[in-house]
Length: 249
Image 1: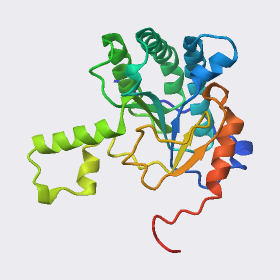
Image 2: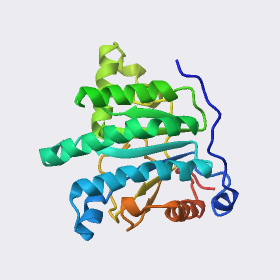
Image 3: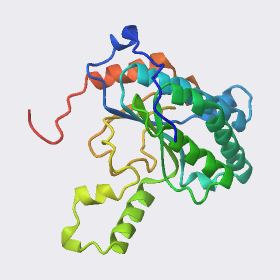
Image 4: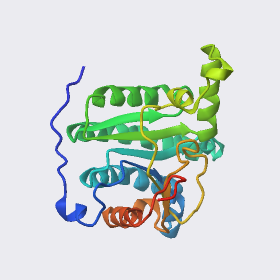
């Protein structure tokens, strides 16, 4: 069993000076625009997916330096299986390759990796890579990065209800708190801020239960070009929001 290592990601005071104190506890990102990024450059969609996947480590480090404790990345939805088979298989291979190449550095940086979504439909080698990465980093505490892969918000709720029924939970005992315990990562706090790149303005079946009171931020920047300055723009926008959670303050 791996032991926790001393984090190597240190706070960037120049970056934090632009962002709220404290920053959002949990940020979730819908990483969109890889295909359009590639098309604009006369490249294949697979090259766009590779560029987008390689950007993940940089953005993890950027949010970690700014004090975000939880980061959830929407990498592959339950609906993405409907894309052309060749594109899906290439994306799976790219993601598996990146997991293998990046996990040690993330581990040294004190990052804990989690997965939400289905594992049973993924290739055996990729399932193994995910499980080994989760096991390796499970004692790290610098920041938790949750990767939503083969994830759908509706599917998550359905599986939670099915599990409750299988456990014999009575209808009168069902509550929001109990349902949360049956979610993929029920112990994690709800997202405070949801960012979507590429200018689209929809959730696309992402964290539809957990996002009830999240703040939303959209940017026309395509995911491979989403960098530290864009992280600051999103956090600055969040700092200007007044969160009331249905109350009058």
